[in-house]
Image (tube, rainbow, N blue to C red; front, side):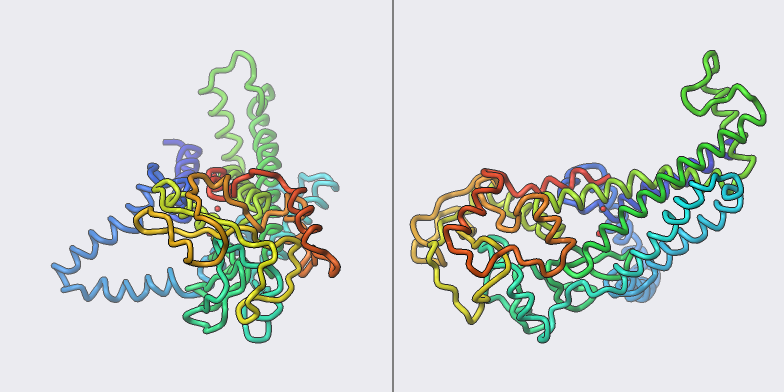
Length: 428
């Protein structure tokens, strides 16, 4: 087995196992081989080891390993963050000495920017406040979004923090705190991704995706130049006419072996770049849909309830009086909820006197028949992410103006977030 084959297999194995380990639980991958492999890694293999240890040491070894694993998986620690920084820095340390002297001035400037930006956005995403809900910030976050009466209902306190949950917030079991507009806890930044740092996280993904693609392409050019030292007819693409694939890969391997450090980092960058771009595309799609990773999984749960015929909705009165004990009197969001969504265990309609809303309960079969209150359209959704505390509502806006704002949005559009996961080639 040649050096190129070994490098390719190692890099491919690392990339694939990372994808399975971190993204195997995504809703769109349920009932797929990826989900099965995720269960093998996190369920079947640990259970087998547990059974063997129970016989050999009465469970003492797995008890100790379990405490260590619980710390690694469910406590906040910088292990993966350090690994990520080392992956960047060591890769650049191996790559730059062989590439930098051969770069033009333009590529040196662009390369320097591409190298520095991921570190900058990593620092900002990792150290920034993701939107932690505290007594000092509670009232401000309560005024950001109205409750949609579908995913988020007023009057529900956090069992751990003791504060009323603002709309779109979630308690992070890793960070042990409530986070406003919680997307997910990301081990790569050792922090939650939420309202306060989501824009830095998106920019981290973008800058890392550009770095891996840019470095991979530059590296390929250098490998091709090295291969031409052995045969001037070699071209990276298209394959030289009349050459067999065996001849092509032999020359390509020789080009890599001229500088193994540059060649191996180039291959790693090219193989990981699609994963980073896929994760970036997934999060951009979530923004397009006006939702988050956490909310996409909630919508997926609702779809399962609808498939079982156990989901119902009815209208909220337009002149509904808010309960100021649990809701903010005013929010910066331009529209208010017009529906309430609920479920029953046996699929029978709820009692007409049950819950908020007016009229009869209507069975819901499709997500497209439910309004996603937090989707204002792609550009306004981007503003919500990248312009903190931006007010979409003027103080003088009336109910009729709010209805006009709602009319500008895409009609009969489902909350697409549950299907957004199918674009992932992310947790974070």
